[in-house]
Image 1 (cartoon, rainbow, N blue to C red):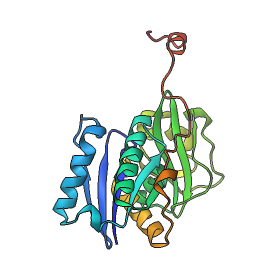
Image 2: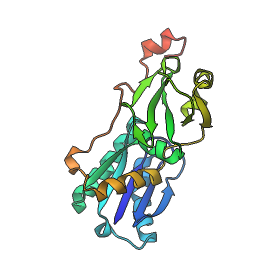
Image 3: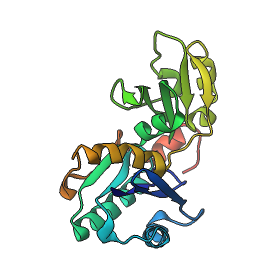
Length: 225
């Protein structure tokens, strides 16, 4: 089974090809919009693997949460390719893939949501324990047990989270970022179970509907218009 996975939830964009369990991952050029680099990177990576679009059995994308623009790019490119080549689509939660990549059993994923907030998700054996949420660091809900692994750039963006989580977290991975290889791994299992969806049903998972502060809100916080 051959599967293409796309991950552009953050500035660190990547794609991966899953070829019968072997994964080839490549990262988008830094400092250039994903919308400009994604398709050339996909074509080059398929060529490197000796594959064409006709050899694919499905396309997966990280559906969110994450950068609003990045999620729209991943979804749009996935829809265009899937429609053109009549392929099923497999949406994968951004935090779900990060939980898998962490290698932990009990995992809290924290992704910087900007605007003083963090996206969060609690996972056990890479299975979500509740819906992904977004909140201020001081409002993050805590588990009633110890032994958790916490990962994601939310830890670096909001240092106060370390103190808040000290009683339940024993392992920290602040450097872990979303990447397409984990998206491909989750998607391959779902595609093997015939859980792909129609291209028309693919959509980003935004979690919140606000992308930036208004001028009035920035001024109220002491910022500039």
